[in-house]
Image (tube, helix red, strand yellow):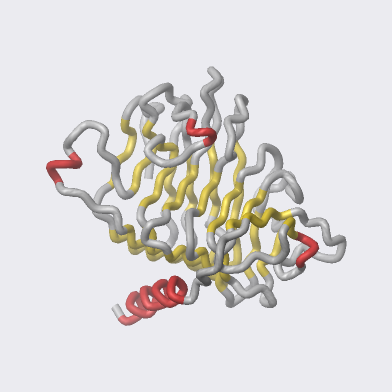
Length: 267
């Protein structure tokens, strides 16, 4: 109980120190030519991100090896950003967090999926790693959103986030959605969405989304954790949630395999 209380206090502290300055959109370029450190301004379009900024990883600086770090949230980086999106159309990204430090997302969502509908199959795995490191999501109106889909009649797209090489994951947010059209998805095509999440070694997840039982039983309602919900067309591929070694999940509701899900959804 004491350990859980300390982690919850950390989440609240991370939220309280987030800057209130206007957010900027900062995208990774890996263009410095000297290193792949987050603290190097030359690796970003827009300069080193701060606690208010929306951080984007698109096609620049990708590699082709799952889990191989191509950027480093180093100890000289302040450790705070507003939001994070992996939105590349090709290649892979893996963020390595410096040992014993944390990456804190305090002002928005963590999103895996392209901003637009690429009208083709995309099944790419991004990762965040560091066996003695921590990822904190601390925004009670934010969500963890992992999905890839398309309105085009091709099946097999899925967004994937692998935290299995990460020591600690703490989330004090609103919702988690894997392949659900009830949260933003590529170009809001609202079709063939799928997502998978591999949790970290140790996880503390507290989701603020709640509703009355009678409301949950109505058509069209959503859940705090939702997997595989495609009221249009499904993508013929499952959405998956893999637990870590230690998991504490405080949640009001979960919905798996809703509205034309592909076979089923798994946890």
